[in-house]
Length: 290
Ligand SMILES: Cc1cc2nc3c(=O)[nH]c(=O)nc-3n(C[C@H](O)[C@H](O)[C@H](O)COP(=O)(O)O)c2cc1C
Ligand code: SF4
Ligand code: SF4
Image (tube, rainbow, N blue to C red; front, side, top):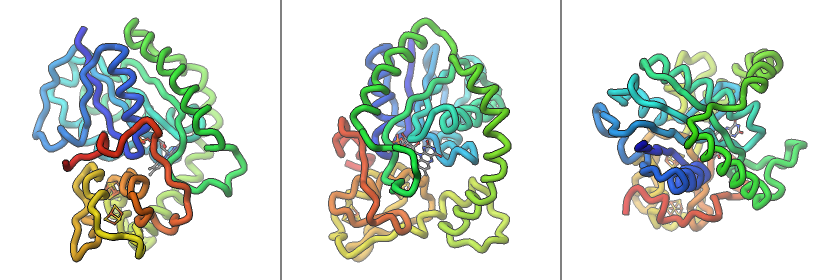
């Protein structure tokens, strides 16, 4: 059985998961940003895996680039597809809605998501000290648990077993769906604010996310080194007059923010936020421009 693993990653979490799985199930590893500019894509494999981060769980968010990627697969109806979602919070309330969303998108393109998996990893730079749950208190413990989970996921991929989510899904639909419905508008309002759009704008999630870079702040520590240009997966940063200039086609992946060697670029006011990237990833692994 030939398998291809496609991944998208900002801090390296999904990259490490994709790399570990590819090694264990003997699959080819492919970065989604590196193939996204193709018009249509004929995937030459029996099975593909999509590894991606959960974004904005109350909106069932997935990175826009992952949605665009799925829509480009020409032979989607004839391939076995599995997905692994990484998230920073608890999987049953964060990865689950994102996987549901991916499932809908794949179905709308004529394909089928045959197996859904997830793993929790340390959260992006977001400064969560105000939340009374221990999200990132022990990075290494979270990473070690994820490694064990990935072993189980690989076993299931090889055996073509589906997921154990049935009960979690029923509970999620019962308990979380109404709560997330209530939270949705405030998350959309926050996106409008980051995108510097008026509250009565009719722009959708799909249109607001690329504009959220309007709230990225570059401080005086920036020396124009250009690392943020290299780690940006969608070529959204140009250096003009020795400073990053954002092009408003952002994926909100936080890679520029997390990987800047001088701690000089921040999403909105998070300059004090703890910067995070997966400890096993070298910055050069994240470069899209050499
Ligand atoms: C814009 C954005 C929104 C996020 N929203 C959530 C969320 O709602 N729930 C969650 O558990 N994690 C959330 N995360 C955290 C990521 O899902 C998590 O850190 C993931 O492992 C990052 O993977 P990556 O390094 O491969 O990009 C969010 C991250 C970003 C950048
Ligand atoms: S990586 Fe940091 S220091 Fe380098 S250009 Fe970008 S913001 Fe400036
Ligand atoms: S500008 Fe920063 S947050 Fe936006 S896509 Fe590029 S690296 Fe990601």
